[in-house]
Image 1 (tube, one colour):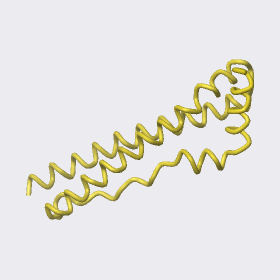
Image 2 (image 1 turned 135 degrees about the horizontal axis):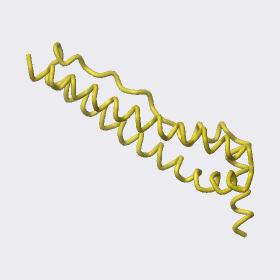
Image 3 (image 1 turned 120 degrees about the horizontal axis):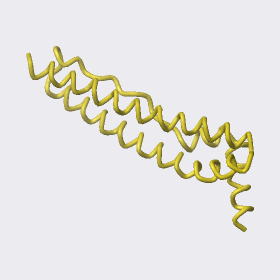
Length: 117
């Protein structure tokens, strides 16, 4: 039963890459306000956009987490397609973390610029 479930999950991940894209999707980075020129309302809207992206990024990573374990096991068993899919999804996971971190850095710069005016 365990092997059958692993194979089913693997087949779903490999055969249906569009399913991955539809189920595990990350929104575009929000546009940040220019802290030197923005109003308080624009800065608050920017903060809300950052928080919404962070929540979306967490959901994206949780979605990928649901698939990685089965892919890793199959890759360790020698399945090359699973290894490729595992790498692709791990790279996407890591890229979402990097994007979220960079967004926080960029928004903090805009906050400092806003406070300095």
